[in-house]
Figure 1 (cartoon, rainbow, N blue to C red):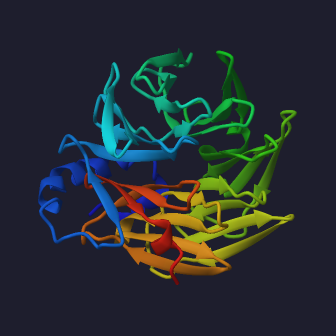
Figure 2 (cartoon, helix red, strand yellow):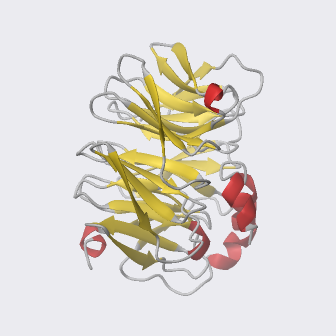
Figure 3 (cartoon, rainbow, N blue to C red):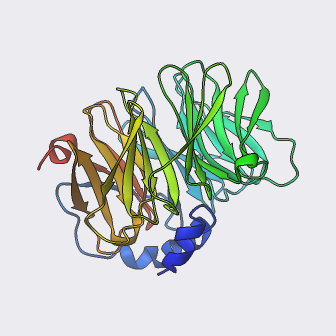
Length: 330
């Protein structure tokens, strides 16, 4: 088990270490007790594959990145496919589906932002920096691709082949999570500064202090109402910003290791609890937890489809889903 203090300070830097541990143990975990009938699990096609970031496309395809692999994964028509790419993935944290049956992803070894289409073709857009460290990625309603650029301490947009950077380095921050609301406003978490940053459609940036200091900000999402949800890893909380004010919700299990969250169509917010092998659901101010079917499960990313089925990646070598009927249960 990794040191929790490492996760507290650098959640994006320790993915490789987590993945290595998961990969070594995957063969053992696959032989564990049978799955909970409430979950549906799909094993990786290659036993050493470690599914990481996750995105559900409008057409129902479930895309995922694979750590230490030269492939991008996609689940469609009831089966998993591996789409080969030129280089091996390293910290593939940024992934988002677009409205054209494809997905965008951060490609650190290529020093690029890339798009994979439904037919398997890949197009890459190289970054100008010789060293690249990237966080999360999101696709805006206008087709712009936004991502957290750790190297340049900026929030960057790629559109029509052109990169436009928005500097956050002056705030002493490291950008990580990215989300875009229906109006085109971009939201990001600024690690090290305990702030959320908001970039309006006209490019104006505003920084907001979150209530809890030294909270360890992580992933971020915007729900259909426009409320902004974010993870506070060190504080073991889920935060919400709406109508000009913040609200925070404690995760019942201590040191849960929340790594990702997603806003569901039904208004619920789902999050992963990597350290304790659970999914969490926040609904009407109440948190419910769902233990994964495997004792050593390591949920890393989560996404919810249009039917409210909850998808997640398990670093032990599984793409899995909690069906909507089970997800709605008390």
